[in-house]
Amino acid sequence: MTEARSASLLSAFRALDLSSAMGAFCGKLLRDFGIDVIKVEPPGGDPLRSEPPFAAGHADRERSLRFAYLNAGKRGITLDLSRPAGRALFLDLVERSDVVLESEEPGTLDKFDLGFDKLTKRQPKLILVSLSGFGRSGLYRDFLAPDIVTTAMGGLLYICGDPSLPPCMPPETQSYYYASIYAAYGVMLALWQREEKGIGVHIDASIQASLALHEHVAFTYSSEGRLMKRAGSQHQHVAPANLFPCKDGYISLFVTQRHWPIFLEMWKDHPPELDDPKLKLNLERRKNAHWINPLVESFTSRYAKDELSHLFQKHGIPALPVNTTSDFLCDPHIQDRGFFGTVKHPVLGSYQQPGAPFSIEGERPEPGPAPLLGQHNSDVYCDELGLDNQQLEILAAEGVI
Image 1 (cartoon, rainbow, N blue to C red):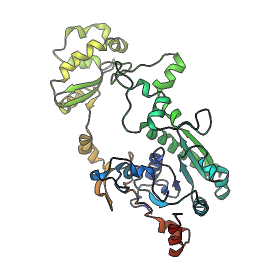
Image 2: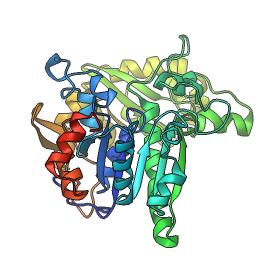
Image 3: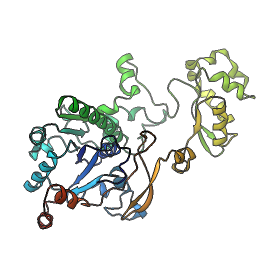
Image 4: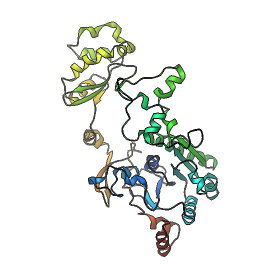
């Protein structure tokens, strides 16, 4: 079993994770909730193992840092679902599991005769989560869906970036992470329903639809017919609410109607035009952000970001430094809360890895290493399914595992 499974709410459950990049974060969240997540890879390995960045710059299937993070703490087995023997073993595992997570092209499991109906014959209370770019039905169900496509089609890309430039792609694969959170939320609800009614369910999660849940993407237009425009880091409704330069970086500042007079009071030598009574209103300041922001920059640039943050916080104004990744890792607050834990990996060595973003009664689920390719084949196939070593060797020689 996975190490460090303290603070586990759902340790009685098991999930089979067939997903690659799209749904891997969903599987990670399920593991953080305490579920025993078994990563099921083809014998040649998950394609995610071939994606950079690689530890020490060496391209190797055990050195992909992205794979290591998204599959942290999972157990790992290999299995070829295109082979009859592979499908038979998978169904044996399904019978002993509670959740199956997959992110293949719609219809792939049906092609292997492993659709929801077939799976629930072996495990009637199974929860199948199918995560795809556009869902399992509709005009776009068969469209290819890399992150940039779903981000664009979900409407989020259009409102990202500087208003004077083309849309700017958010960093990393935000659409996959965002949809994975909703898929994991669906698993929680399905498990609750299963405990109440004793039935399984097929969850059809769309990445496009998940992104459209941002209020500025769909709701503002659907309710008012108003198309939101790119505003860079500037808040859509409040000013000064933006990123402002300091001596050693940037600070994120958010000044509302309540904070505005306090802000002017602490800024003793502020320009007199900022005392205009009209500027007490949020919308009036937002309308005039084009000339207010440069004035605020002349104030913030006098200070170091930590110094200014403490000054603002002392006066009850929301403002904090824009952290670099190093700043975040070394943040004493993060260290005090034990967010990072030491993980030992047989190839990557010992390193610091983020844990779950929550604690349970003061205890945080500890992070664990990602599995090596096929690391737990013997544990699962022999110890749990009852195969012997000779059978395991034959399956490996035939390319089934």
